[in-house]
Length: 239
Image (tube, rainbow, N blue to C red):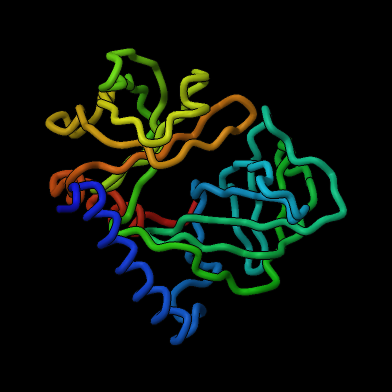
């Protein structure tokens, strides 16, 4: 008999393959255009340097134009100048879009050094999540269930079946598969401020670990909470 984690993962993978096939067949342009990218969305860039484990560079959309994006890159991990093209991934709602080849240059605007990324092609669907996720910036405490050890972190995002946080503790360099309890400080949805999950991935961003986790069961309360927040964002004017 499959565990709750394994069963959920199997169901999600099945849904992802079906939706990805439909969207590829019907055309990506019909599902998202550059007009759907909004300020505040998270961006990840990876160099096309043929390495097995390319280094990740993270940023946030500041502004979009018809065929380009202005992105604020994490100043602690600046983009290196290279002759290679770059991959780019952006999460929009419940879909992760991936551009296989983009070019960028640094520009100054309003006294800030920003990354100008040219969009010359349509993205490919890299993954689809079962539920939409939203960004969250609350501090949190992470307790490893096996050892009882606790670490501090900061939330990255949350959805009805998962969450991600960042932490500078070296424990998270090799933590895949660990079961944890998460306590979110000052979470607006107080009834769901304590959650459990299993670590699926951990990415090292220059000594800061971005850790993604899956919950054992879908959480209807968080599903409604996230849906309500995202709906309000849609109704607000573009920044």
